[in-house]
Amino acid sequence: MSAALPDSTLAWPICWPGVELIARAEGCMLRAYRCPAGVWTCGWGETEGVTARTVWTQAEADRRFADSLSSYADEVRAMCTREPTEHELGALVSLAYNIGLGALRGSTALRAHNAGDSQAAARAFALWNKARVGGQLTVLAGLTARRAAEAALYLRPDDELPAHRMPQAVQAESRISASPIARSGAAAAGAGALGMLGEARDQLGVVGTALASVRTIVVDTLGVPPEALLPLVLVSVGGVAIYWRWRQRKEGWA
Image (tube, rainbow, N blue to C red; front, side, top):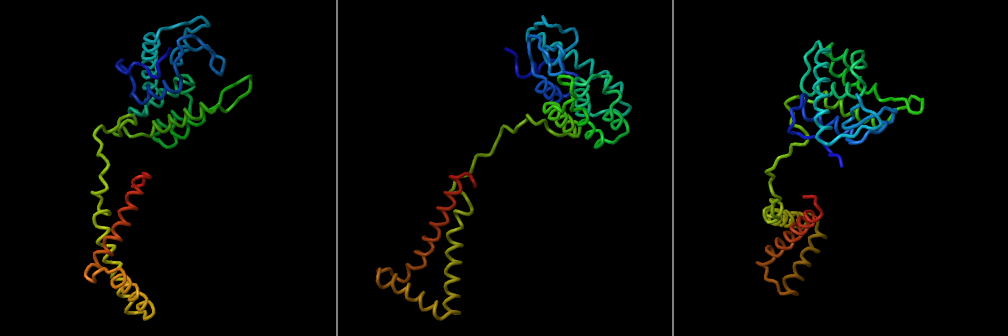
């Protein structure tokens, strides 16, 4: 069974994101097969010297891949009158590995690169998304996706971390009890609610009468002491705030 990626410990002549791009696009088959264009292929997209009877081990496929990329990288550098960055070189080698060194030499992508127009060079990758299938020139989805990935790699700054690098020290999610909303929401909401009630009672006589009636029910009917009314409101409003914060956390929103 072939590997998903080649051996990363080998001496690769281009940046690892470039190796990864080519490897994922080509895939690895240890027995020869015909590509969609009808060319006998083996390993990581190797075509040179491959026949219908070619069979390789994984180690041999990886080694041949590294050797091929080394040759391609040397040829591509020789074509570049403007020194490519690591990511530009990786993208151009990927393009050449797929379309051939001769095709790259006459390509708009290389001309734009040498002219110093990186944006035009990146756009020109997309011109190479067709192949003859059954004698018909056809746009292939796989080629279109590969050209887009190459263009993105070409434009990637060299000081940017590779996409596969992830921080290994990640802050744990905070406890709900530590949430500023949960801790201060009750007091702030409770004070705001009482302030709004007092203002409404002062400004709107009808509403004020209704609020006084509610207070009478709570204090007189339910037997709640007047001095306990404020804490009761704060606890109630705070309880609602904490419940909604818990619900947000449960659903993954906060």
